[in-house]
Length: 328
Image (cartoon, rainbow, N blue to C red; front, side, top):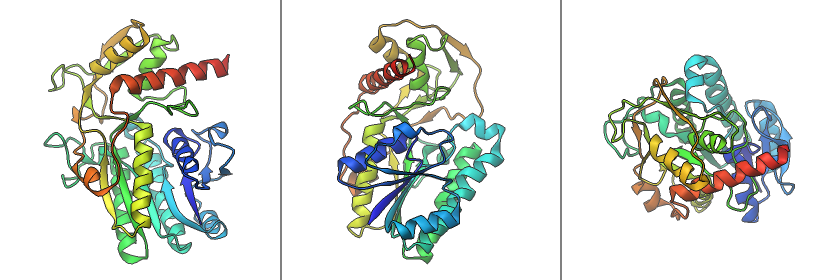
């Protein structure tokens, strides 16, 4: 039996593939390489270049490789892009996920782990926000993920399938062993952009909005190290394999940092004082998103190991230097 990882050549997916291999698994990676990289997939895993929304091909792969679990990362993730081009997000994140789910049901897959997002909450009425809070996304990205959560719940009710939907807060950092990291040159992740500015790859960093109702006027987010995040997926898989019930869980640390906090951390860790520009708000950005973590701590065998902003930044900075050396 094997695990299929969609989007396994991308940022979080490639970390998951390494995590599975480290645990003795033999993952099958499906990625269309639109934003992922062939070199990011370790040689111990098999890469199939395909669209995760190709139902017929996915169903055939699940049968031929005796897939018992799917970990689904493939999708589009840039909130402002989803506002500008919503239909592409509904196609890539919702329609393709529906096809993958159908293939999983046809292939007899028992376990499904879904990469969801805190964007399903929209602008929550309380902080931290817990899993039972109302879902009111304010971007097509968040709505596309919420729709997939609904499909997953309904499919599990109708078929022999159990799932864990993990609602990510802000994922950052890189593999502590230096094997993979956020590699897309034009990525919009704040810590990625900030370390690029520190290393001279950008002419500075833009802060989108300084007039939010937060302590310093900038958006507050809960940053989780990518290595802790993929360990949460491993724990979710163990939970399902042990017969555990379907779950929806926040993935974060339960503490928030503002944009200014992140900028200060990157400047401190890099020892570079790069330019920072203050510009207007972006559409689709809630003022504050911090995870309520009680449920994940109570239900999974998981505890954070890298809950430190400077550590997250240091690993992101180390990876960016590796990318620079690779390009030289």
